[in-house]
Length: 323
Ligand code: XMP
Image 1 (cartoon, protein in one colour):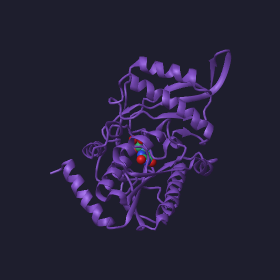
Image 2 (cartoon, protein in one colour):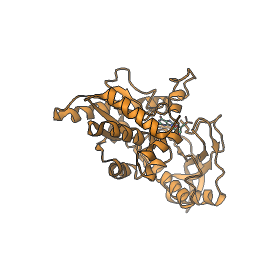
Image 3 (cartoon, protein in one colour):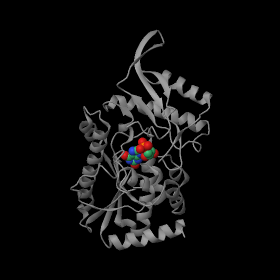
Image 4 (cartoon, helix red, strand yellow):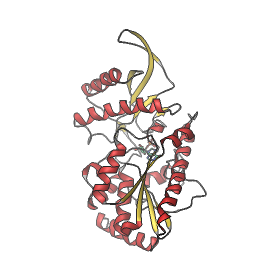
């Protein structure tokens, strides 16, 4: 029967067998999935695993620091942090089409890993032959890899991999749903802040800017997102919602009146949803006073934003993310 203990035991044995005396690297995204995958592989092969955190400049406020601090403290894994912001922003320059963004981000990720690998093997230890991915069952299905369903989005940890990939994949969470992953993480001794973290997509804020991704727009969205998260946490709503994407409509402008006069700024979309597994979702009925606080603060504190709108669409027909 299914228990977290069985899953861990089974996976640990399978990973040991697969990896042998070689080494593996694992990309950490700051999310639950990659953290649990990494902790599981670390349990199996210890310091034959090196984790790589690619700071692609598409992270939310404070996220990089959280990975560097919390995760390392909890697991003691070897962590290499690569600052790749410029590389990603250059690759994304001029690109607005969602699938194109996803493919670029997925591709650059792998390239950065491959470079990191070169640095990791510089110590003449055993070869790094494996790449750990926190792919979940819904990712497999939605990327068309599972049961032949139509491809909805290229999740960057599945569909975006280049064909000339140099690594063999280890995907220990491939058969699990999110709630099961959380249980496994808990059993592995990961702290609450990591295990209960809400989902955040691998391509990060890159797919939450409708339009071209620029440093300026990212900074603006980071501010708005931080405000929304702060207020949701303060209102004690983190456990009630599945996640709340905050989206910048960079290609849309509307007229507002702020301070001394007319503004012509961008809307921010709040997309709070409740869900069991992200395959389907309903929009969260957040208290009006919480929405009001978020709206007031974002329009007051974030430059170039003069409107906050609420997404009241379920999935289906809308997906959770806007891109
Ligand atoms: P959608 O937008 O397809 O999202 O309804 C379903 C869930 O998946 C997350 N998501 C991603 N996670 N890589 C990830 O690791 C991705 O490329 C990706 N795209 C979407 C999304 O946040 C939601 O939880």
